Length: 453
Image (tube, rainbow, N blue to C red; front, side):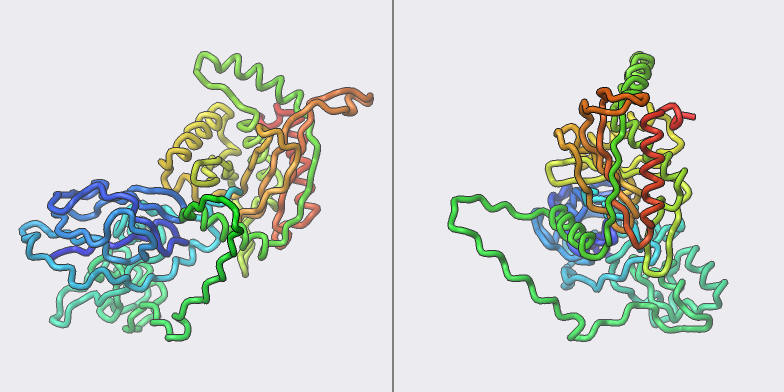
């Protein structure tokens, strides 16, 4: 039996993508784990892996195709013993109805924003099966549910986890429609079922009115001036949409402190001298990432995420670091930055930033984070206000360090000073709590041994 290979949802916000490049051709044999294509999502360009074994019988969507809807059949795979020449598309190029994202994805930051949302999925159908069987939510945009069993009484197709959940809830699997590959019942299909229920858990088809697309905005009039038009990438579209949403829906409050850097710069020089033999060179930004992470743990009321009915408080500090790439800004994450050494943070930041510029990050490396940091000091920017990455609660904007008149030991002198501005979601974080975080950050930078204790 042939297998339909469908456009995967590689992030919970992805509704369509660009099939940038096919790495296989018709007639090629593929095995599970083989890279079949490169797909440009609303996040980045990512590799798409094969889940099943077989022969590529037909490629239905050519490389370079834009706006390929999630669930669209992009190729047909002939299984072992099946004649690829006999395989027909069967009209499979029509996009199935995407399923809604798992509620667990609510509030995951969008990492394509300069200041960023996500999912851990990397492969096509694997995003449903493997994620579900390892306790992670299935991806948004998977194909519409199919009957789990044939009318002839075939065995119900269901994952082991789905069977356990169904048994504990008293749900009859024979009456549940599966949204996994080939109609397999997965975790998401049985979680919402009521005991004794036999109805399909599939999402109801929208009415014609609800399904009607919103009217497209009127394009701007381009002045009669010599110019060059560049097509917007999926990442740039997402950045524009997410930043607009943030500024329109999140009440920002901005708090700025001036921070003396002399002690931190001195410690950095000493540490770099001792780390030279290990090939590690700390940047000021590496130390500021650590200071922000420790501050968030010390002031937990700022290490939060706002949802419509809950305030989520995080127990560790994962810092999203803004990195400029040719496609736009992306924020790879230094996880558990509050407990990692400066040398580890430095090594990770350099590795993540390099792979971000090469579009080689894995989804879990840039999706998530509890707060963000954006440093524009290297451009000579003295002070700026960054846009929050919903649903994160705050972002720290770092300006350039410069020599300024400063009160040193009670007397007017000259010191190296930078301005740091915290942008806080006022729905989740009160001004006094934000001020406490900024005060803690200032103290840690001015007395940097405190962040190492």
